[in-house]
Length: 52
Image 1 (cartoon, helix red, strand yellow):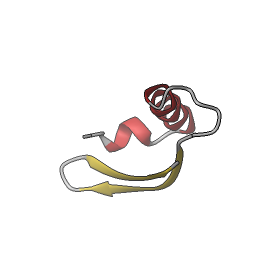
Image 2: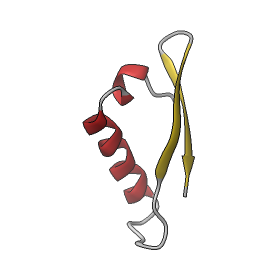
Image 3: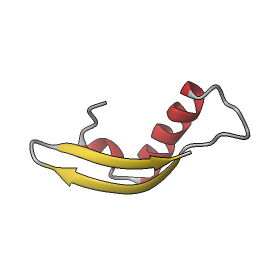
Image 4: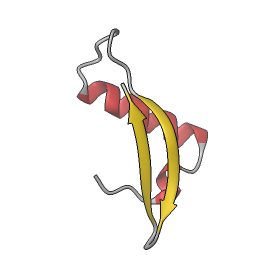
C-alpha cells in the first residue's frame, strides 16, 4: 500500500489510518492495529511498521 508521508505526519491522520485498518480487520476488539514505526522514503513515500 502506498501512503504519502504527509498523510501520516499528524496524530489525527495517523488515528484515521489506524481506524481504517481496524475496519479492514473487521472491527474485532481482540485484533487491533498499532503503528510501531513511521519512516519517510524517497519520492514522498512512507514505510509504516504495524503490529496487530
